[in-house]
Length: 361
Image (cartoon, rainbow, N blue to C red):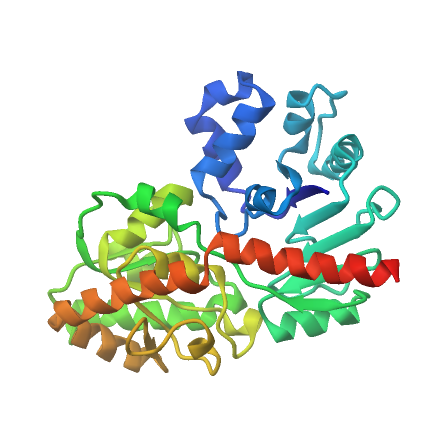
């Protein structure tokens, strides 16, 4: 079967940076361009298309920003202009590849592709705006039940539980020889958006403790860009993407994953949970009821229940580095055992088989 993955809704800040650092790739072949995106590791836990090959799929992978560039690299008639044309070029690329399965990651629009493929799979792990419809999809994958409820209300015929994976071999290459430079590291967005309120409260609690509390004297790096300089300022670093994000996480003795409850509800399963665990450092993450489905608290990750508890856990594990190191390595082993990209590909293949098998009966 032919499997096409379309990555939509990427952070708008990143693609310009990607091309600015790789100006020659614009003159390279389609395959060179595709492999450069995959090798960079940005959203690597979601780029599943290459892993479908071992299961008998012929695959392709495109980034829907800007699709006119991918269009040109494929030797197809060019489209250029504002972002609204992404829909046109995406359709042209889909028709050129003629997939049996189209996987639209972060899809928030109903591309009319049912006529060109028999199985249309979407991914959604955020709130569903009222304007979005999932009519025409075969299923939508999600890591959070609240998102699944919104997707069903928006017209999807079914929802399947699914999770980001860990390209562990790739991650280990990224972080090889990365020294520990900080006691505490966080990498991610922390802006004033309502969905990040919990994250900001936790980071501000850590910052206050670094300044005048129990964590005074510890080193930290918050890779949040220009977000919240008033409190995070002394420890604020530029945003990191792809391979550099993994290296940033690996530079900390302790790495933090702080979720966005308004998006995911009271559930673990965000992408950073797996990314942070994969670098082999002690991960401190939110305590959600289902965290033990993925990692064993106290042995493979450390969990916290409030900003104050987060500070206390950081204080303890920075004073007990051997325990922190053992937890970090155990979490990384769990990634290999339970969360590999190969396992995620098999999971997705099973979902596809169920959909297509049912439709043939």
